[in-house]
Length: 129
Length: 282
Image: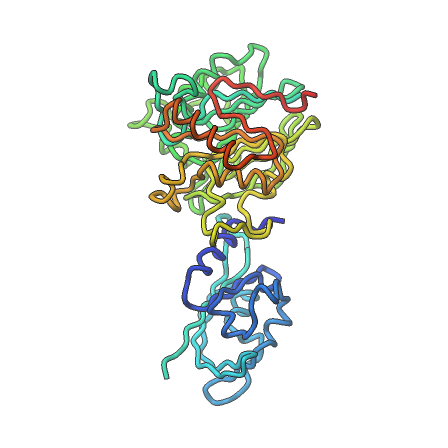
């Protein structure tokens, strides 16, 4: 089934950006992540394909500034998905490549013309050391 | 048998004149007639005026399906005679925006000072917002979806028992292709509307050279349109929404080049005003 045009256009935009972008459907399935996001995840999108929420939210380890683990439900993308509102956070993330990155993440729900919920998108920004 | 007649095939702006007399200068309008007499009109470009003059007297309902509200797709609306005939029920289907209903958006054009008659003064008019779930008009089952074009724009898949007609008049499915590679079908704008269509009427406004300067404007090249048709497995494709600068000789050349370069596995018939296609004819 063809994705809604908003999701197709979001993927196209993401594929031309230098910041990591993650795109999920209303069920939380990770539909797409761009090449910069592949570095964060430590996996190529071509290898993983679509990933369910439980899988992608546990692929990386996330801790806050005080070193406390951040539960998946508190990740901005999960908040945008479940509460359908924008969310923002700053934390440390350890991807499959083993590197720890200090990142800021902003996520927004994607709502169609008639307010239909189509998914959510998260943009990562690495905090300068 | 579904009969499809092209009344306007031009894009952007009407382009009448001796140079375009062969393929026509009117903007987008297509008539789709069902076996049971159901009459659909796809878009209300300048071609709809002539269509309106040929509506059989027996018709009591006409459905106008608008892809979007750019001027070349609605300019003829006020000159469609059945709109003023109280014996005919006219239904207009088209996309709303996030803030305005279809009726409110159309009223921006069909009201003074741009037009002397108010939309609300038309005798038997009903507006329907799109996109919506599958709906039926007479013998037709109609599917719509938003497609890649600036502003709310839909494409139509019109199914009858004899076959499928897909209308994607303004469509840039190739926007964002990397290295010319098409993504999986679920990532192609308009795919579900056009898959296995018996007749695909598709935007083919630009040459490759023009497209370099018009990327993101919401239109296709001949090459992209043919590749899209191949992706969806269309049986016949009609290049449509001709650029106003393309005269008859240019359109002949573009079709020849497309046939030579792409060798499509489907029938390719240039979009010519007056052309009639019989879907379901054996």
